[in-house]
Amino acid sequence: MGFPYVRGYKPLSNYQGLLFDVVRDRLLHSPRVIESTRARVEEPILQSPHVGDLLDRLVSRPETAEQRHTESIIADSPRPPRPLANYLELEARNRSLGLAGEEFAIRFEGERLWRAGQKRLADKIEHVARTRGDGEGYDILSFKESGEERLIEVKTTTFGPYTPLFVTRNELDVSEERPDEYYIYRLFDFRDDPKLFFVPGDISMSFDIEATQFVARLA
Image 1 (cartoon, helix red, strand yellow):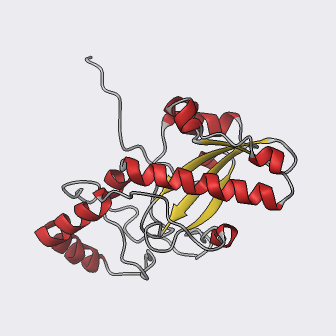
Image 2 (cartoon, helix red, strand yellow; image 1 turned 180 degrees about the horizontal axis):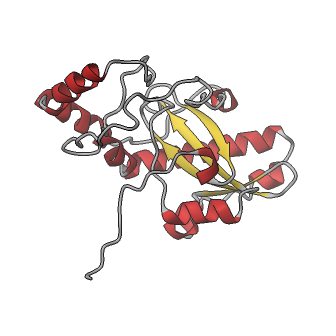
């Protein structure tokens, strides 16, 4: 519904349909929840968080719904009404958050290559989103230890690892064209305890893709 889930409560699907209806109505008619959620997702981040050991921030990719052997009981139900705003999308547009996440990922990559004995490659890391703009389909040009390019698209959230992320058509295309080099770096819990995991390859092969916007031309 566009809201972040409560920390510590992973999204589950074994629940009564009535529970969904009740929670939905409470969310959509609670000005306090709506206002506090909007304030949270739009709050600027002034600088990338500093942590002790950057490489310790790397965690395993979370289990998928298939691995958890669960299916949503509302999957075939009518589409629920949207909230007044998609707060996860608002957070994804938070430029200070996105920039801080990219800077964190650059530091991580530098440390990864430095410890692998590849100082020369570490010095060549490029913040593509700054040097070339947003049209390349990825944010950072880094390298594998072999010297091959690693194209990194950074997706940052202050919420948990199961929070949906937003990708562009260009990012999908580049990941499909160069799957052996493309990586999504998912940063989560970024404001309080930043961690990240990698999702390599073609985005459409690792995520369920749902269209949220359309191009409309006069017929």
